[in-house]
Length: 291
Image (tube, rainbow, N blue to C red; front, side, top):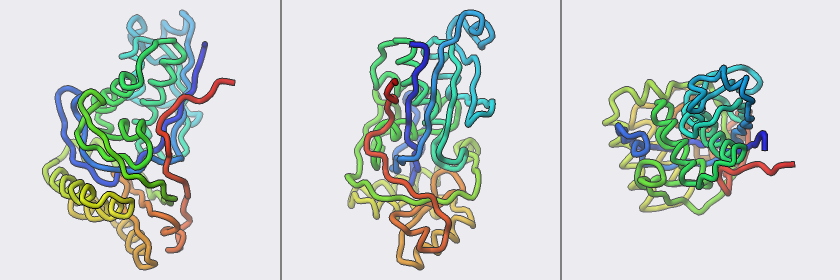
């Protein structure tokens, strides 16, 4: 076929303990998050030989062009996915969640691109192989360490060991709550991951131990709320919203890494915010049916 489309859920990281590595397939994080029904679609379209000549490294695979929500854009993880798969394609990415605000858009785009490219080009790669390609592409680009594996699993994923499927180990919280979110803007993942990671790792490990001792959705969000403060990542506008949710008896926290607050149930609406509502995605990333 000439093109294929895949979906990957948005992923809110509640807390994380980062473990960089020179091998991007081994790099990753321990932690937990929420895969959301609001997510990202990527359509991968094969190009003919004339168009392929304009793509970077066309002989070994490359990106002939990319649009994000209808606007030309650069997404380094997507470029790396196509290069690793050795295909040349145009990619159209559409996102239901804000970009750069803690929803794992770059990881979702990389993962959806890998799944769609496999279908469009008949590559016959396995799911774990494609997840590994997308995870390594994002880690190498410095845009994330754990979103891809969570987005593929769906639900409320818990990352027990860092890395792509050959190295990482996953679990999950068996719940599918309603979720609301409000975004106040972007926060640089690269800046945080490029700083001192020791306080973040220490706080993330403590949060994970807490969740594993009591694995339910409320503990996941509560552990994330305390993590944000202890790791020094909580920003003022999110802190104000989290407090407003708590004052109404709700439970909310900050999305890692973005100026975004999320809450279970109707927590943000009850606190007077004009929130977007969605569900926890039950299945994870998948191909869209062809018509």
